[in-house]
Image (cartoon, rainbow, N blue to C red):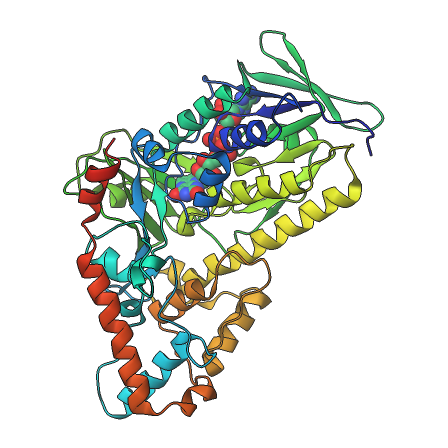
Amino acid sequence: MSEKRIKNIIIIGGGTAGWMSAATLSRILKNGYANITLIESEAIGTISVGEATIPQILTFNSMLGLDENDFVKKTNATFKLGIEFVNWSQIGDSYIHPFGSYGIDMEGVAFHHFVLKENARRKARGQAQLDIEDFCIQSAAAKKDKFMRPIRAQRSVLERIVYAFQFDAVLYAKYLREFSEHHGTKRIEGKVVEAHQNSETGFVESVTLENGQNIEGDLFIDCSGFKGLLIEKTLKAGYTDWSKWLPCDRAVAIPCESVGEPIPYTRATAHKAGWQWRIPLQHRVGNGHVYCSQYMSEDEATQILIDNLDGEPIAEPRHIKFTTGHRKKFWDKNVVSFGLAAGFMEPLESTSIHLIQSGLARLMTLFPYKGIEPAEVDHFNRSTLIEYERTRDFLILHYHLTKRNDSPFWDYCRTMEIPEFLQTKMDLYRTNGRIFRDNDELFNETSWLAVFFGQKLDAQGYHPITNTVDSKEVERRLMHIFDATKQAADVMPLHWQYIKDNCRA
Ligand SMILES: Cc1cc2nc3c(=O)[nH]c(=O)nc-3n(C[C@H](O)[C@H](O)[C@H](O)COP(=O)(O)OP(=O)(O)OC[C@H]3O[C@@H](n4cnc5c(N)ncnc54)[C@H](O)[C@@H]3O)c2cc1C
C-alpha cells in the first residue's frame, strides 16, 4: 500500500478517544520517533459522557505510568467494584455483576458447579438457595459500601480485590491532555473542514482547517465522534447496524447533586423501554436514560429520568442520538478510527473506553513502522470485529434473558432472534452449567455467570466431578468461603472513608 515511514501522526478530535490516543502514542513513540498533533474544536465540543470503566483501565494507567491517587483526585473519581442491575429479570429483582471472580475452583472444576450442586441438594430439601454473590469479595463489599485496594495477605480474599473507576469525563480528557502535551503532543484548536486524498492511492494526505491552515500527515487517527469525519465522510468505510439486537438508539443525560456518600458501583435500572445509569462521583452523580425511540418519546424518557434522580439536577437534559453498530472497516488506508468514530455499543457494561484502549493496544502491536501493509490492516480489522461482536453478544444477553412482559419493548427483546454465539453460550449453561471463554473474549466466566445467575437462567445440571466430593464436605467448603468473604468485607473501610484518606479531590 505505502512504503512511507510514519513520521507525522494527526489525531482528529479531543474527546476521550482523542486524548487516550495522544497519551498512548506520545508515551510509546517517544524521543522524536514521530510527531503527534491533535486537532480539536472547542466550538464543536465533546460528548462528555462515558464515566464508568472496567478493570482493564488499570493496565492503561500503568502503561502511561500514572500515579493512581493523583488520577483519582484530578478526575473527581470514585472506585467501582461492578454494576448493580435492577429490574432486568423482573421488576423488583436486582443483582450485581462484579469484577473479579467467585469463590475458588476446586478439584479442577469451576467454583460455580459446587454452588449448583449444593443448591440442587437444598432445593430437594426445600431449603433456601445459596446466592453466588456471597462468594465474591467485590459483590460482598459493594453491598456494604466498602472499598480498599488489594493488599498482600497470603490466602486472604483481600488479595483478590479487583476494581475500576468512575470519573468525570471532561476532567479525564483534561487530565490526559496535560499528560500528552507534557509528552510532546502538539494541540491545534480549529475545525477541520476538508480532507485531501492522494488521487492514486486514496490515502488522506492533509486536512484543512476553517482558518485555511493545511496540516499534512502520514497516519490519521479519526476520533471525531459519531460522524467519523475521515473514516466515514472521506473514506466511506460503511456502517454495520446492530439495532435489531440492541434497539436502544437515544439517551438523555442529566447530572445531579449527590445525596449521601458515593457508592463503589454503577447502577443500571431497567425501565419500560430502556434503562437508566447512575454513576456516583466525588462531586456529583452522573445519570442518563438510554431508551428506544420506537417505543418511547423523548419527553417521556426525560420525565422518567427526572422522576428517578436522587438529587437536584445540576444541568439541563442533554439528548444524544446513536445507532448501535460499527464501521465496516475500523482501519482504512491510512486512517484508523477509535471511540465513537469507530462504532458504538450502548454503555450498559461500560465497554466503550475499554474498546478505545484495546484498539490502541492493537494499533501499537501492528504499528506500521515501515509503511502500511494490507495484511496488518486486515488483521487489525478482523480482531477488532471479533472483540466488538463478543461484547455485543454479552450486552444482548441482558435484554434477551428477561421475564419482563410489561411493555412491547421487553416483549421484543425477550422473543427476538439472537446471534448463534450467544445462543450456544446460553445452551451450554442451561444444559450442564458450563461456561467457556472464547480466546480474546472481553467478558470472562464470572461476567457470564453473573448475568445467568442474576437473570435466572436455570442450569439443569452441574459438572459430575463435583460428585467425587461428599455433599457434607461440599457444604463445609462453601460455608468456609462464604465466611471468609463476609469477614473480609466486614474489615474493609467504607468506600468514602477510603477516598477521604487516600485520594479526595
Ligand atoms: C449515552 C452514552 C453514555 C456512555 N457511557 C459510557 C460509559 O459509562 N463508559 C464508557 O466506557 N463509555 C461510555 N460511553 C462512550 C464514551 O462516551 C465514548 O467512548 C468516549 O467519550 C469517546 O468519545 P469520542 O472521543 O470518540 O467522541 P467525542 O467526545 O464526541 O469527541 C469528538 C471530538 O472530535 C472533535 N471534532 C469533531 N468534528 C471535528 C472537526 N470537524 N474538526 C475538529 N474537531 C472535530 C470534537 O470537538 C471532539 O473533541 C457512552 C456514550 C454515550 C453516547
